Every structure is written in C-alpha cells, then in structure tokens.
Image (cartoon, helix red, strand yellow):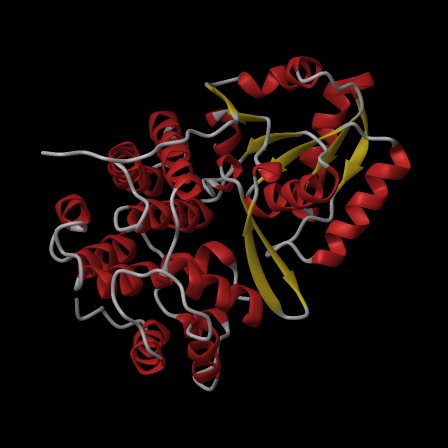
Length: 353
C-alpha cells in the first residue's frame, strides 16, 4: 500500500482526567494571565459564578449570555464587557454555545482561551467558528480561534441530562462519520474517527441505562475529544452544511438537529463511497444510514425535524439554501435530492440507505 498525506495536529493543550477542572487557576497562570472572564450560558450562570469564586483573584467576573449558533450581537456585547473589565483571557465553561462565544471573541481580539467542556460537542479542539447574523450562519477556519487549553473533566459531565448526553454524543459521532470521507482525510484522522465513534457507541447506551455510570461518562468524553479533533483537522461536507442551514436560518437546536440528520446524510453519502463508510456499518450494524438510525432510536434520540418546530413548508427554502453554494461532497447533490432527504428527516422515516 502506498501512503501519501499531510497531517497537522491541534495546537491546543489537552488536559484529561477526573478532577482536573480544579486546576483551572493553574492553567490561567501557565498561559501568563491573571484577569480571566468566565463565560457561560444563562442556564449555567450559577456554575460560571462558582468557578469564578474558586478562581478568586485570578478572575474579574462572568458573562453569562452565550447562546446557540453564536449570534454576532452577543459576541459584540461580550467583547465590550471584556474590554471594560480589562480581561486578559476567557474561560469558556459549558458546551458548544459557550465555546463558540469564546472563539468568536478570540477571532476579534486574540484573547487567549481556556475551555472547560461539560458536553460532548467537540468544537473546543477545532479552528472552526460558526456565527449567525441576520438569520444566516457562516463558518470560518482560523488558527486564531483554537483555544490554548482544553480541560476535560468527566466529573463535570455527570450532571448532563440523559437526553442532552444522547444528542451531544450523536453530534460528536457526526464529526467523525463525515471525517471518514473527507477529501483531505488521512490515516490518523481515520483512526481517530473510528475509535471515537466506537467509544461513543459503547458509552451512550450505558449512560441511558445509568446516568451516573462514571466509566461510561469518561469513555464518552474521550470519544467526544477524538471526534472533535477529526472535525478540526478535515473538511466537513453535506451533513454539517445542512445542519448549519437549519440552525442558522430556522433556529433549530444544534445537537438535536445533528442527531436527526445524521442517519440521512451519512446514508446518502455512503451510497457513493461504501468502502470509506464500511467502519460505520461495522460499528452500528446494517447499512451506515440504517445502522445509525436504529442506534439513535435505541438510545432515545429525537428522530424527526418536525418535532423541532420545522414546518414542511420550510423544507423548500432549506434545500435551496443548502445547495446554493458549491462545496466538496463525495456524492453529487442537487436541490431535488436534498429536498427528498430533508422530507424523510422531517417525517422521521428510516433512511433507504
């Protein structure tokens, strides 16, 4: 076999283990900072405040307005708050919404970031920033948005509700599954993708059975790190394009949208590249799309876009937006095929592939 590829690992310092979030202050000092602004969503405001209290003199306050899809107007308020308080770094505590806010701030100001994930989103180890403005979500890649330090503490995921654990974990699987057919994939990202999906395949059913299963929580967070790393190193295609369209233009919830679309998009593309998608079939059984569908259903995932508030009338516009700009994808796409795919996902039907 002849191999030829390039590989660039993430620049983020990864700290993984139970209890490591207690050392956040040490990492603030290690990156040369002393005035951290703690970011969170409104839902996790109390957790953000508790972290700020533990940091003591190393923090100058909190900003608890992070929200889904990283609206530009929220970022602008956060940047103004950081400047007002003289923050020299941000600590993003939470899931993809909070991580996205920290990355958006770093893109504008170069402020250093420490991320403390509490979900399986995976975006904390990527140079990717998705932002929403005027009802449209755009995505960019820049080394400026890669966090300096990511602190993975499985203890912090123990309070993640089972439903959110399921959708967040399926969101992570989507990163890895698309990485298998990325045009710029390489043996390292493929290895990470397969191991990440395997970890989540094993962990999520165990979490559904017992939300307090620490071994499963640890394995899920490990899988999320691997899947997120894949997302950060190769180009994404149809799945992520459609999910960004639905989230940015119709305000559907991020993880739930990924969970519902995953079997349909992966199954659609697997028709064109069955060899590359064979690991998905091996891990989940059957064909890639149907195997993922059956797995998602077995762990209680939402299955239909209509349950997220999307109307059937929205599907025409969604298909138009998702196919308006060309992008790399292993299977040719057109408005008609994507409209049909969205219809099946809207109704919650089992994908035909």
